[in-house]
Length: 82
Image (cartoon, rainbow, N blue to C red; front, side, top):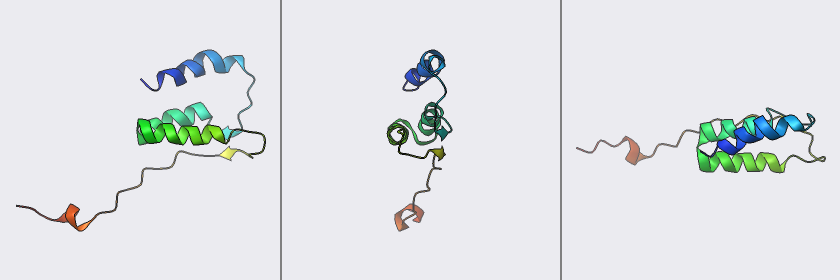
């Protein structure tokens, strides 16, 4: 459901604008992937941070969605409780 506005932007609004993205992948593709990989909350946060970098003073470039970090295991995680 969160991805619907992004798909709308990509299909209806983006084609009307000249290509000017300074990042790879594009911000809309980054947002879709971030939400898919990290979930709605963290993915939306990552997308917002990425969009905030879209200005003439940022060089752009390759900016991939960070991979999911594994949770550190604690002694409680590995304890066998019978």
